[in-house]
Length: 458
Image 1 (cartoon, helix red, strand yellow):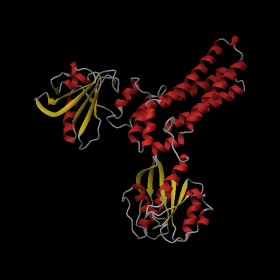
Image 2: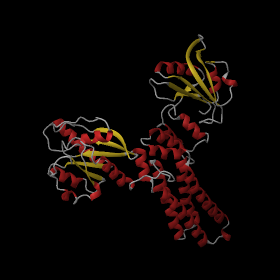
Image 3: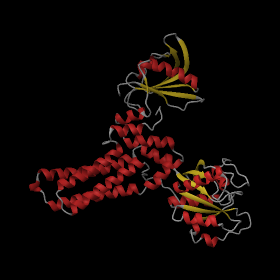
Image 4: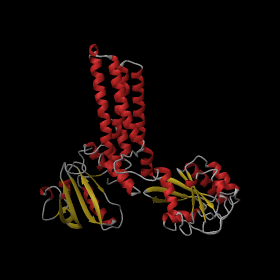
């Protein structure tokens, strides 16, 4: 497959200033040269140079598009192959005409993620760096972008390689003692295994400490806004999203379905779910909305319980507080611009003071306090990205936990002075599990699954 020359559109389809088509493979320069007319032949062009000209239909001699063509010769390219990037006018028709001519040459359409897959297979990046490319594209906040960029640059890879190097030293020591048992003192070897296992487990623990925060930065916090009708749920969503996303009226039951909106608060991405007001109702459609609201509550990472501060607590609200007790949740005492009737002492039986936020969505009072409460709840008030390696990928987290378990088994076995050839199995398993993170021991099916998540031109 790596002997094929591939092409795909690398920019979003639609109207734009320019569009970019990427071509990669051994024949990329020669094949593009077949349809490119300029003062300079691409086959004679130096690497990393840009050339103005026209794409021409070789069969009819018709000029198809005015373009800029960038030549990048192997191995100094993203895929480490010869790469040509064609910058055309943005627009569906212009890009289609150029792509049609390319595919008439000895070039095939790239599969999703195939450019990044080639970069991995050709050794330019490892698997964790390749997966970070997806995170970079999908980042929903500046800090999520910074974390992904550090992983693309190999920060996580370096940490994993250091841990694996320690395990290689351990395996080499075990191998020597298996081959030359007459020179081995079994108790000393067991102590060496325990020491090295502890060292690597300590490194894994340090990485896993960032896992929850890293996963939040990568995927966002699913946040359900819940409460009785007309307490200000939709107004809160609109205030946080800085747009009139949800319809707001004084009529109870206006919101009948779950409305989703992505926002970023203090560089924390939130997937806000504005839910239907929870109450008993005879309206069939509204009842379905209430059921969906209850389901959203069970699935949410964070619950924002909105109460009307100008009214006494309702039985439905007390029942709801009982249901979400122990969950990550914040109480919002809305409508603070009106005379207050809500008894805060009752709330304090369920929530600490710092998770009760007085607000007036109407006047925007208290929005900053809510943002601070969310940040405090999930990140102890701040997110550090300068020197910290965040583990954000679910696959990486699972493999780190498996490797830790394998090393714990090796440590326990060494403690019991079990024969070292048996302990070797657990140490090697941990080495392989860490290797799967960076792709050294990944299966072909896993690679296909990962790269299929990429867009076509990446």
